[in-house]
Image (cartoon, protein in one colour):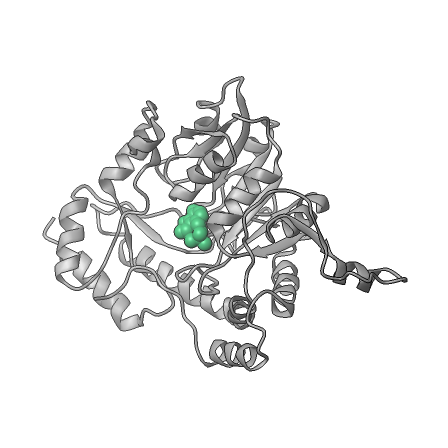
Length: 369
Ligand SMILES: Cc1ncc(COP(=O)(O)O)c(C=O)c1O
């Protein structure tokens, strides 16, 4: 079965992980700081902290905004569940908004349709790595959380996706453009937010006596004591994850070029297939990350089954959140509901061979539509 998502790791990742294991320090440590520095440098982020998942980074991001308890936070309905869960776990209420049918992103119009007097923040998702049109959303004057889980290589007018709003997150899970196995990251415009994130991620513990001793002239005799500053869960990333990430950073340009190559093949091969609606390319002021290739087709379920029978796995990413009874939403979001019926992610990842890409194209072209 050809998989729909994937990452590529090789001997460099294995060597880095082996070195960490040989060092006998597998948990949080120096490799995390090294990864944080190099990741921030690549994207041009001033403040960045690694955590153990993108989902937890979202929870951290909402927490860092210090919104009044019970605030309404706008969340696109066409996204991963963690976006809504993060809002609820931080003590607030997700209010779902629609996305545009072409970009699969929120727009100023879809956000504004959901904004009320109780809205205290807006979450946006750069779907598939296609940048959200951020400036008109920032003009609404509300704090913005950017979910750049798909957008590690994306930019908008030269600004890195994730680093444009008040706070932004990345995911480094096993199928993301840059993987650390599991992992995530958080960035913010204000330095103090990331300083706080670095405390929160370790159960809200501030400096230990040992660290205080290292940074003060007189030292500290009881180095085992520490200050607990806030109640919070543990989100520490490991040296093992960071070591994988360091190898991935070395090859991200090649990985991205390969994703773009597959994307471009699909774009040109499907241009004359009248029943396929293709995703839009990046505009001049944008850089895309090509996380997933989503087509829209009239007979989606039949196409998915036909491809499954041909050993080509596809999926719908995502089942619209407002349709999930857990959230008790009464919203009617017609574009998300349309996408729920006609959109399909087809395979795009660096482990696909070009022969497999040709097979996927040929199989889709032969679909008896
Ligand atoms: C849009 C989006 N946000 C957040 C996440 C959560 O990231 P993680 O899997 O690292 O927890 C994902 C994961 O798929 C995602 O697609």
